[in-house]
Amino acid sequence: MSQNLTLARPYARAAFALARDAGRTADWSQALAFSARVAADPQVQSVLGHPRLSVSDAVALVAIDHADEPVQRFLTLLADNRRLALLPEIAGLFEELRADADRVVKAKVTSASDLPAAELDSIKAALVKRFGRQVEIETAIDASLIGGAVIDAGEVVIDGSLKGKLARLQTALAG
Image (cartoon, rainbow, N blue to C red; front, side):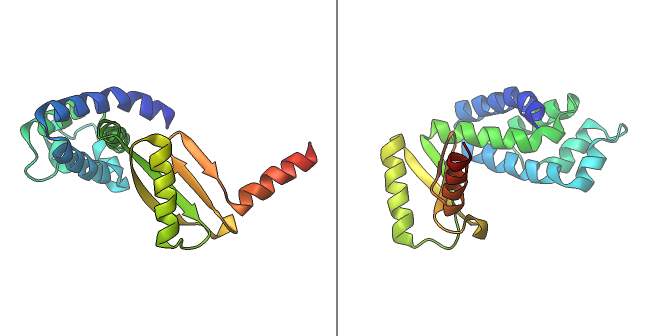
């Protein structure tokens, strides 16, 4: 996985530079997300790896209908270099670059049960204060947390779950 990210990073940066310079980051984001979903499909992966698949057929397989010429050229470059399988990583890195440029922090709040809207608003306000940026929150449920929540905001992870507290207590008692 880390090797794929290493290989995908320069492509994602190049795609983002092209999209930003043209003022079309939203269009590129949509096109790359579509191509990434297609390329991640196991059946498509087997076809993309076939040695007799032409570059134009490979691009036609993963490209969104009516993709702009720069997107088509980018996908052709990936196909020429046998890198279409990296599209999921490229799309993910592209979104990180876009969020950073738009000064948006994406946070995932995982809790043991549904959190009330007021509590989510409070978490969002605290994250806005901490990062000084706009915050987009995604929620998830994980009953194994027992209670509390885990907040994952990029490089910052705040574990306020009961499961995490019990694990830290167990470590402290064992040491």
